[in-house]
Length: 492
Image (cartoon, rainbow, N blue to C red; front, side):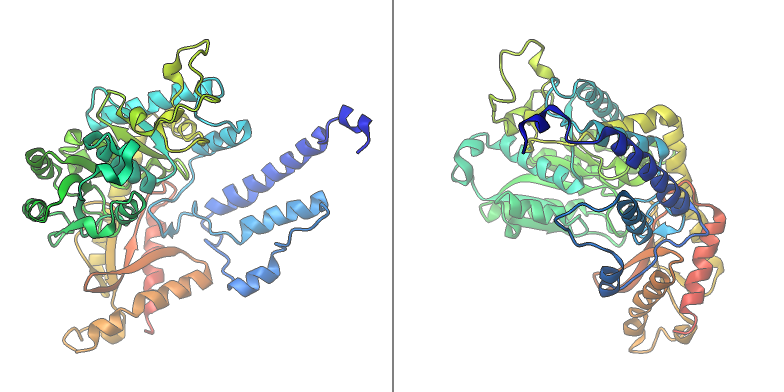
């Protein structure tokens, strides 16, 4: 490299801005406009080997033309699933909030890390404001918290902090400082509890699964029984996880009764409200989480029901003694110097197990600013109303059978095709019914009309789980959904 080459920038700023302007137009047209247009496909399905032929994924030694790269941007968007589409009902997240998207674009552009006030002054202050608001909705006057990369990590944090609070020497001495620890959670809990126990060295064999009732709710009497069993086996019951909004049925554990059991046995009480936490914004539905204020910690994912965009998960603590910092700090002197010229309390990065941490607060803050708490409440209430509408419409149609009457917005149902109606007494009925949902799912995916998830659960064969969170959804979309299920399954 010639010495004088270092005297000039290595990037062409003008060309870069031109590319961005064109790329943003592609994003606006292909991802935003078409992605939310009900007349467009939810996805243009291709088998993996076909998609590999269509997309030019090879990385070469020489750069490619701007025109070619822009076309690749179009291809990436075109062949991706449009999760913001009004007929995407496949996950616990969907939709596109324009203010949250703007927040995501700003944070990606600024490209900073949320660990010190020095490098992220606006976002350090903003994060605490947002976390404080979330804690207030839970019912806590004080506390702590941090944004995490997903609800699973928030649950990991809860388990780790609970262990440190009970056995602080474990941070220094590891498992040698610990008795056999026992974790308690319902049979319908999120799988991250299993992963967290494995990751933290507690072990999946030390998870005691508490029975649930017919609605999928934890049975407090069995929790007490499992805790006493663990004690009799020489284990230390240190952590109880209750779920508000189970992944499949949308069940809410009875928090008041679970809190009473935790208090009697001195166990940390964690609430995984990653899915159901946003019901706290609704005066009409927050009763589903009665007792959450008694929790020691809470996981809550605004990227799900509130549409802030992936990822936005809050880990919230009732403790205000600095437990989160003490548990995770490593005092890296190159980052957390003790002789800085500002208040070191604003350097929050040592609260986390991460070093670099994306800014997740801006998209939620900007969306909240634009909609207000009242606007977010309407968003939550609308989702409940649409679920109720679908339930009522299903009851008018032959062939739709509810798995359970929903109390949340998880609508679980079987579609019974004409060939199986009236044949519930046949020995192969359930086996045949279990094959219906996968075939209908394949047909809708290949047609691109909509997306909805299915799964088995315990002894129950495959059924659909329909979720509506997108404010763009209308009754017409839901009528189409029911019609399309009938059309795709009428010959099965």
